[in-house]
Image 1 (cartoon, rainbow, N blue to C red):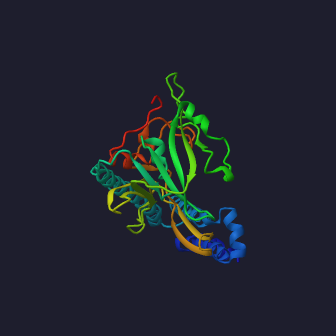
Image 2: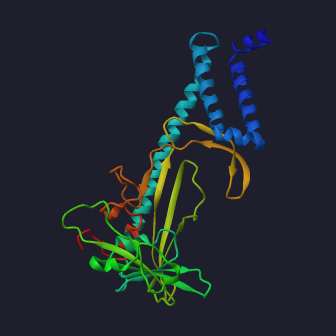
Image 3: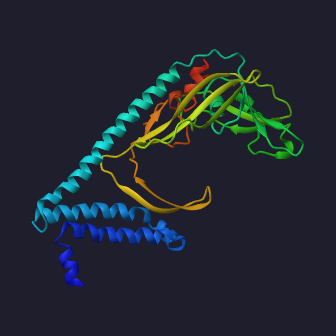
Length: 327
């Protein structure tokens, strides 16, 4: 047995077959949920990718030392050269797509009515109220008494003291809640004014617009890069007509050296036990439709520059004026 193994290691085909056999066993163990979950916890999805690089290194060293034919050097060279070419294609496609999205965003120009009020039906659309000079925003709330709305209103100075530090459900109609105590927590200048957002429940709401934000699913997932693009849509609440649409988010191209991720994992959204393979995405995230932060601060603490907000593109499209820490 050992003699057979030793002989196989003197052949390029034998080396490839050896690592393919290990990879097949690793994938088979992940196929079954019981052993697969254990391997998933300890990085089982990375095993096959690591084996590929070890195999290519083994082939290269064996070819250089004359253990196998020099022609086998072509395989690792082709893999890494091809992977770098995919990286270049990926970066080019991301650059082109991102530029097209940002151009389309800038072409959106609509003068929204004043005072501006809106119904928030998205996950992040309340950020528009925090970053732009808007009178009020509303969100639908579930209630045993029927439909009611959360009314978010801008306040400054002593008016912020009207909001309670805690939310009390029984007093939701009469006692405002201090939903955002400071709109510019990162700004410490002496000229800073106190600005906040108050939340109070109301029975009726008459917003002029509706703001939606949802994951963009207009096109199938791209092959050469990963994207997380959110479509922000503003509609006239009375006519239901779309008045502005922008897209913001991020794109991540392939890295210079490709690493294969293969195996099985728990899809808790389905839920199901799924298997598959793909390249590992790079870490160079490219912001699309907004300015990427470079301060390395707390991502949950907004900075003064409104352009770092993903709500900025829609705010500009609607002709809204950004807030300032000195307002």
